[in-house]
Image 1 (tube, rainbow, N blue to C red):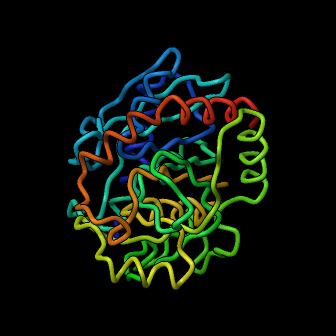
Image 2: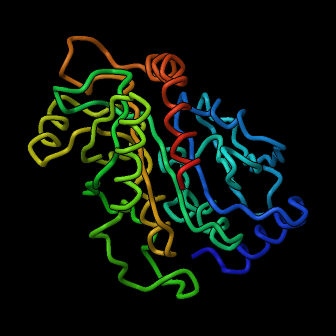
Length: 273
């Protein structure tokens, strides 16, 4: 278990770097979407490697830093790159940044990822509003002794993704003319892409998209009382749907091609929060 003092020391370091700036919203940017962080006004960038006790990101396309500042008039902390379990981090280490942001006063988290589309009506480049998730693997960041200063031993997950924020996202997408799917995201630990049989099983369970992130962070955020809004960008059709191999390069290319629409939607959502 990570000592609570480590979180406090990380938060204290960031408070000193921020000089009185206090973020209200945390944005976690997935593969191919990190450039959205470049839109932050009056940015204060802090590499993860500089923060005491913080782990680092090793995935291509993840810059591995916080960017603090203003976006659409809101005070934000943007994570350009996240930590994954497949990199060798424990679930607790992977969500470390979420808990540090809670200590800085963040109350809302917007989390994004690049996912594989399971729903046959989806197309690469489309955005899915996450309504719920499926976790079948023993990889929760709440395993082990509970830290009561973050939250209760048995947090409720019946509304993991805020109904009010989801309604805001739906209305904003309609106002912007952005096509927005809505569905269930299923977590796979990776780093290997899912097999066709696993994707068929996921579809039978009710999943619309699959990916290797997001769920641990959402669990941690809800445990410590944050409101959560989640999006999955379909960067490919999931394994077995098309007769072609899956590659991380494809993920990055579709992410780059979709960043204009993604940025438009995120900025309008932030303005309305």
